Amino acid sequence: MQDATDHRRPTTAPPQLQPALSATNLTKRYGDVIAVDDLTVALEPGSITGFLGPNGAGKTTTLRLVLDLAEPTSGTALVFGRPYRQLEHPSRRVGAVLESGDFDPGRSGRNHLRALALAAQVGFDRVEEVLALVELTAAADRRVRTYSLGMRQRLGLAAALLGDPELLILDEPGNGLDPAGVHWLRSFLRQFADAGRTVLICSHVLAEVAQTVDSVLILSHGRLVAERRIDELPDPARTLEALYLELTTREGS
Amino acid sequence: MTAQLRSELLKQRSTRTNLVLLAWMVGIALLVVALHVLSFSVGTLARPDNQMKILGLGTSIGALFAALLGALSITGEFRTGTIRPTFLITPRRTRVIAAKVLASMIAGVGFGLVAQTLTAGAEAAGLAARGIHIELSSADYAQLLAGGALSAALFAAIGVGVGAIVRNQVAAVAGLCVWLLFLEPLLLGDVPTAGKYAPEASAGAVAGAIQSQIADSLIAPALGVVLLAAYAALADLAGSLLIARRDVG
Image 1 (cartoon, rainbow over the protein chains, first blue to last red):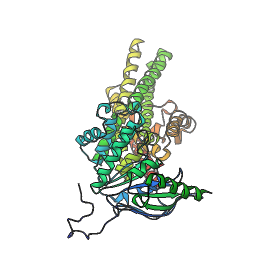
Image 2: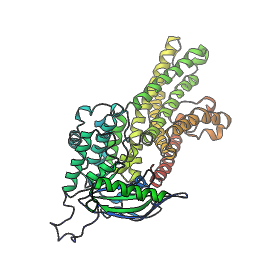
Image 3: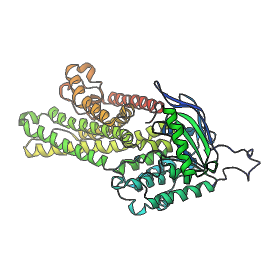
Image 4: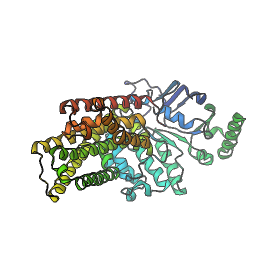
């Protein structure tokens, strides 16, 4: 595992804290519609950030811009200081789960991971590791069409973890997970961040977010309307909801 | 690039899509050959050029299914959404397309060989059953197999290009079927001077099998290879450029 802050190697790089993910004046238009509007954010390494906003606020579009699945209209999005496509081994730096349905229903979970592992130049032993980590080993040879939503979420997470990344981007990771799965995910993400790595989660489940993240970014109509540390909020679960509703409904009216 | 190729080969093997395609191809090839061998008169079937025409059906069927295989290898990823993890791991998208072209060409060789072997075998069995002597030489069969495999491989590459351009699975499959089953036969029948340079007619020329109305105006096999390779290069280049530029939904 890499020390993301480079504290132990002051001679090779200046001891600056490079953001794991940054967007600068990021804008994406689809015709007359502005999906992402002049967004500027940076994620500090070792933190879990919640990315909140109503449906259509531009969260998923932002993730697609960061991951080079879509081209920004203007502005830049960088991961570890570089455009995503210029990363040497992207899967070793960034793991992402964008939708819980990104599988071929006719392929087994194991083969899904193996096909990705081959392209990522990751050994098949790592496939078994991540299968065990998300507790899918027993179901690994079944076709994904037989999986429950929660199992698909876990398979997506396993795929994102194949390259042992430093930044994890998850879109609605709790969807379909049972309470034990949600609890497991929360402690997994905490350990992940405590090891100096970075997590960005999109979610609508504010109570869960309040328990999981260190800070939140709230997006409305493509614009960043709030950036808060969770420990600044008294009684986070309640205040976060109040803040969210105030900011996102006022913007809409 | 080898990493991406190995990944694509595993993708080809790990769903039933290609097996289902293969089963359909086998069924259609057998049906079409049986219809021809059983319905024509003994006098017609005894002529070597007619025996050759029936083998040409195998070339067309192999080409069609190889093209579908190539197209499905990319449109299937857009349909299921696996294109997202694929591009996340290999953000240089042209590499993904190149690997899909190679993997589909390898599978296409198999499809071409199966289609031609089956057509030739079914025809030989049918003719023997009706007591008709086979007028074709071993050189004819050699060209048929080698040419059928090569043109199916190139058609698989064309299919990947078409799939990358169109992205929608139904549109790509329908487009390829309409072109290969209806438009090109019409073109061959009505404007053979131009039609003989079209992809399916080129495949017929490469495999040596004579397509229906253009028996006398078939192009030379070598020119057929060059033309097919050019069509494949054009489709794949256009597909790569579009895939690299367009957003993934």
